[in-house]
Length: 221
Ligand SMILES: [Zn+2]
Image 1 (tube, helix red, strand yellow):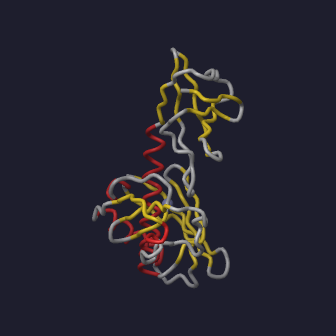
Image 2: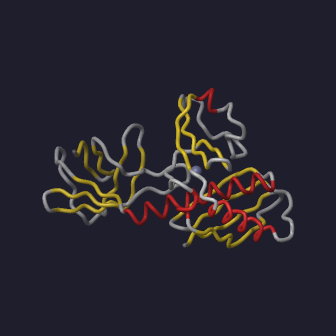
């Protein structure tokens, strides 16, 4: 049901739209009401609510309207594959090269991740790509759980980023575990096992300054 609807966005009493976060872009989709459709082209989290941003030429459902939402499945699935692929990349680069993540960004089936890595050995790009795809083929489970903060931070290597980005006031920490490879505090959406990622290509390794390497990946079938 629509609780608010204006140029800032549409607020519903509940919805399955992911508002974006942790580097993962928001869902797109559509709201259906009485034969009318309102296309949703962006979403973001306000202080409490999720704001669904409509295409500006589509009609706004009035407050009180009961709507049915549909998340654009192809986009969401591609973003989940990309996000899980990035965690495989993090796990491999940490395990094999001891490098921590300093930043990252993702879009549909493409992503970049920055690592704190002093030198790049010969064959680095190929080695990382091969190791990622070996982990994908071995079909590791990806398990999401929530732990109290104190307990979460006792897990070894739980914060893969070079700095701890989990705000002080967060009491429960959501953990995404690529079982046996990578455990991170993370708010995004993921596929259920690594085989569902598909195939990761390491497209480029860029040198962005002292100890700062940017890896660009593409996710395919
Ligand atoms: Zn993540």
